[in-house]
Amino acid sequence: MSPQPAVESQAVATTILVVDDEIFVRLDIAEVLRTAGFRVIEVGNADEASAVLNSGQSIDALVTDIRMPGSIDGIDLAARVRSAWPHMKIIVVTSYSPTWPDPNVFDLFIGKPYDPARFIQRVRQLLGGGGQ
Image (cartoon, rainbow, N blue to C red; front, side, top):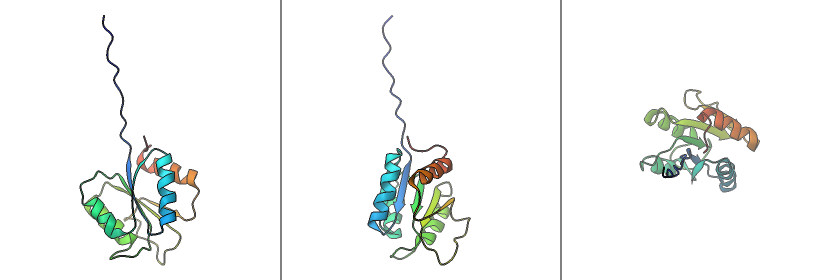
C-alpha cells in the first residue's frame, strides 16, 4: 500500500478593510487584527475604501472610523456598504460621534480607546470565529 499524499488544509483568512484617517490608529487596529490572524487592507478615507470595495476584492468586514476627511464620513460609508453588500459585517470604531449612528447601518460599535483583547473577542464573535 503506497502512502497517501498529505493534504494541506489551507484556511483562508477573513479579510477586513480598515478605514481610518489617523495613521497611527489605523496601524494599531490593523496590527491587532493581523496578529489575530485576519487579512487586513488599510485605507485612509471613505473614497479609498470605495475604490477597494468596487475593485472586486473579497472583503468580509469593514472597520471604519466615523469622522474622516473626504466626500463622505464613516457612517455614510457604512450605509453605502450595507446597501451594496448587505452580508458584509460593519464595525464602527470611534472616539467621537456627534450623533449615534443608525443601528441598522452597523453590526458592532466599539469606542476608542479600546482594549485589544476585547476588540478581537468581539470581532471574532461577530464573524463567527474569524481569523484563520
